[in-house]
Length: 293
Image (cartoon, rainbow, N blue to C red; front, top):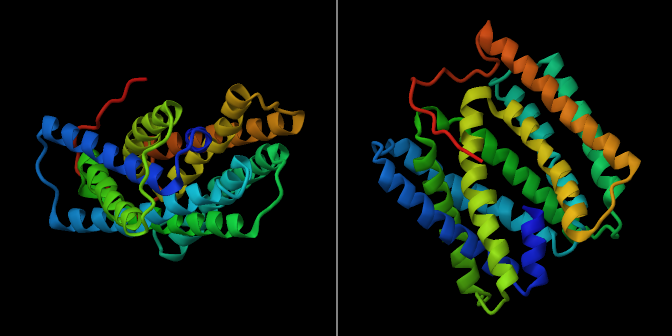
């Protein structure tokens, strides 16, 4: 996501306009998918919960993250944001939703060490206090978003829920953009291409598959697994922007991916035997949408 944002910024797009268009276009596509699938409407609880997630959770996280990219290197911004798996894990335990798990805690530690090596090893810019605060605020907002979302997804169709969340974010961010007079589409074709990537890959695909994973493995596991994103961000930055990966970064990437593999093996053993390690009741059986690459 940081790659698309940086490409759009380089071609003249502003943070507020980029986010507004991202959520508006994504909402339009998602509602079209909902209409084609013709699934039953979600409960009032899901509608209210999903709207709240978009209005106050996802919009704040995205706004803080994208604004931080104006002040920090993409790698540093991602490092600060990806402190959220630790926040989610501690929050889930504090709320009684998950027990302490030695394998999961170990995977979290290994992931954190790997991220530090990958991202700090690639950071060349100075640390800006405003950027750090924005990125940290995005991490807190995203942690809250995940913990609240876990109480909503059990009986929700993922496409319905994603459409509601993104619509809420579009209303929130779009209102801010228009009220502050920041809406401006006078940017280049490269920014429009980057926006398409943000809509299709970083929004529709990312949120829908995350909700599916959240239902299957619980909030802390889903958040730890999703922490492979910054490792791939650094790798893509090397290809697109010509950045080089040093030995320390390669070691960090290996640690991140190893932790995810270990965690997935642990999840496989849990699901094949005992009950899942998250406290939410198992949802009723329903079709799980299949995604192709």
